[in-house]
Length: 305
Image (cartoon, rainbow, N blue to C red; front, top):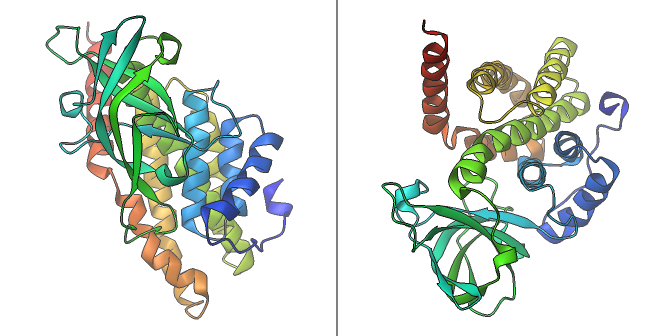
């Protein structure tokens, strides 16, 4: 369907321009992987492909999240995003809870209106902190949002630092289950699938527009089909992690080939943006390698006699 569409994307400079376009795409495509792919194809730059994949991934993880709100998963703090690094805390107060703490690098945070916040349960005494994920609406008393400086790549996509000061949380705003195991950890896999699908789709559209070789487009289409299938797999299964590692390796090879194609269009504004934004693909590379290593270990262990 996409490859018969126009190869020219409408210019887009700000979140306020991108968001209504993405909402229309999401409304037309119930499956989140298609929201990512179509959103990437409609993007005029990597930033909006990434934003589309990120929102699609969040709705895959949180299917009940409303489609009319920009959402964000808030995990990272000053010391990182591991369970031990999460210092934001929840404590019981009357018939509800009180949230205190702060988060950094909340993607689309300045424009977000629904935040899924990872915080430790103060009352739980365990070797590993007991993490819960809670829903916080922008405008909630006790929530402050500070815009962070633009990043060197995809600077159009803003980030924010959130601070929670005695913010009241209702029982209904706390998601069931262990927040880290059920939401934070799987999201890394879900996000990789959706964001990479969006970026490959963006490149496929640019390939049409700039007349890249058809054999490159054919392999990009095959990779998108693979990512679609992976989006239906269990994001916590080692088999999924191993297959995803293979898909990302194939994608890395395809992306490496585009260097010569972009150089042939050196005067095109998209070329300079791509050179700036391709660094996004290196983010969390060490975490992906560790995920794959552990997946092989788990798979080997399960096959042992």
